[in-house]
Each structure stands twice: as C-alpha cells, then as structure tokens.
Image (tube, rainbow, N blue to C red; front, side):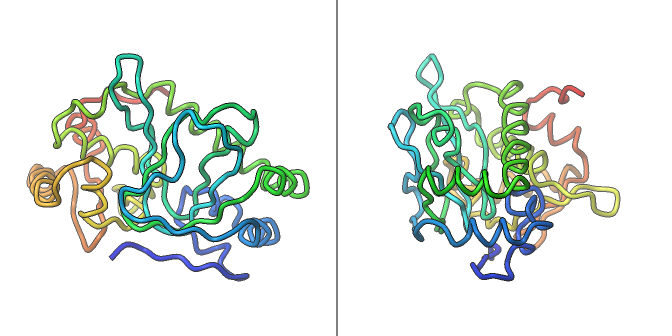
Amino acid sequence: MPERYTEGPDSADRWPHGTFLAELAGSSDAAKTLLSLGTPRSYGAGETLLAEGLHETFVLLLLGGVTKVTAVTENGDTALLAVRIGGDLVGEFAAFDNRPRSATVIAAGRVTARRIGQQDFLGCLDRYPTAALAVSRMLVRKNRWSVRRRGDFSGCPVATRVARVLVDLVEDYGQPWRGHVLIGPRLTQAEIAGLVGAKERRVHDVLGALAEQGVIQVGYSRVTVLSSTGLRDAARLSEPDD
C-alpha cells in the first residue's frame, strides 16, 4: 500500500525524504502554519488539480497520494515534467508571478491536499524565512531538472516511460541504502501505471524485467535501484551533468 500522511501538529517530521515539508523538519512552526492554512481538498485518480494556461494563483500543499506534472510541447506532444507526492508543493510559480499556470498536475491515484490562497502563502513565507528558503531550494531543484528534461514522453514505449519515472523518483526522493538507492515514496504498481499511462499488468512486466536484469529490486510497494547506470540506459537518458 502507498504511504498515507495525516495532518496534525506533530506531523512535520513525517514526510518523505526530498519533499518540501521534509525540508521544514527543523522548523515545526513553519510546517504547522502551512498545514493550518487554506482548505482541505480531495481528488480522484485522473482528476486535474491544476491546468496549464489557467489564470489562478493558489498553491496546493500535497498531503497524500501521487501526482504527475505535465506540459504540452511545441510540437503538441505531452511531456512528463515531474512526479510530486505527499509533502510536496505545486502551483507556486503562479503564486509568485501572477502568470498563467505553466503545467498541468493530475492525480495518479487518490490525492489529498490543502488549497492555500496566494496571500496566505506569501504571508507565511514572509513570516518564516526557513519556509522561504525551502521554497527557493525547491525551485532551484525544479529548474535544474527542467534544463536537462527530455521533451516528448507520451511517444515513448511503456518500458522507457516506467524507467524515466523511476529516474525522476531517484533524483527527487532517492535515499542511499546499503550501497544502493532506495526510492523514498511507497508507490503501488497501479500508481506507477497511472503516472505513465499504461495498464498495471504491463507495468508489472516492465518492473519484473528490470529486476531480472539486476537494475532494480522490487519489494512491497518499494523499489531499490541497484544500478543507476542501468536504469538511465533503460530510460534512454544520458548521465546527468555535474
């Protein structure tokens, strides 16, 4: 089963490694304030949380579930820009510059979040410099990734798409573990299928093939990367720049 997260005054240190709220583990007041702002929202699988091009300025603080962030490329294809999970923040670009949404965010399964208005969000950053710094670090990480991001995602074979999602998860949430890399968020095969737009059985076969090749090890809703080079080869990606 995927990890579930609950709101509460003592929940600031319960978020997966690499997420926005995990960055605030040392500032419980900032995390508690953010978790108290806005209104709770729930989304079903396939539902759109944010739509590219819309003029909106609220942000969504994800509390549980998995989302995919996509954008339309110049040639009309859909590019998968990122994967975001419970503990992450989405929609902050529009909150800062008042411009239309730059990407679409879609639920890969059930997702819960808090919808926070622009004024409350920016006010919290003014009040808590640690929160502002965490947002800045998150924006830098997103920008670094977008610079080297591949374009067309939907036209790739399922096996390539699965490998690329795993690469995303390693880069954003990976944790060293016994000489390998453990992907932090617990994802079901159904959630991975939702991310890549494929049938769950096909994803099961792809993960099995990668495991047989010694690239990954699949546990109960957990994936450990045994060979980062092998995974990038499967994703048809070059090694990242230093």
